[in-house]
Image 1: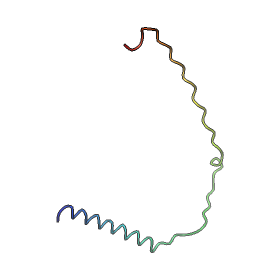
Image 2: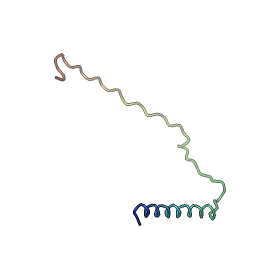
Image 3: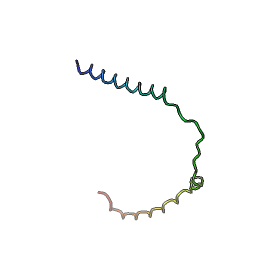
Image 4: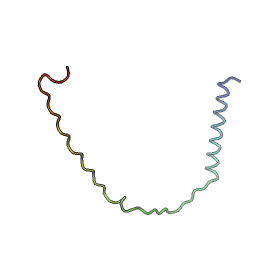
Length: 70
């Protein structure tokens, strides 16, 4: 059996298995329907203040004429 045929057969079998499991879940498993209550911590309700910006950088000293990249 050529390699491509084997690959396609294995992929088809895997896809069939996945689809079979999905069908079984849809058919036999019923979801529980009911209200859900969760406590919300108070800090989650408060506004968060933006962080203070970092201090401004000091300007670099200017180079004398003739100095710098050559």
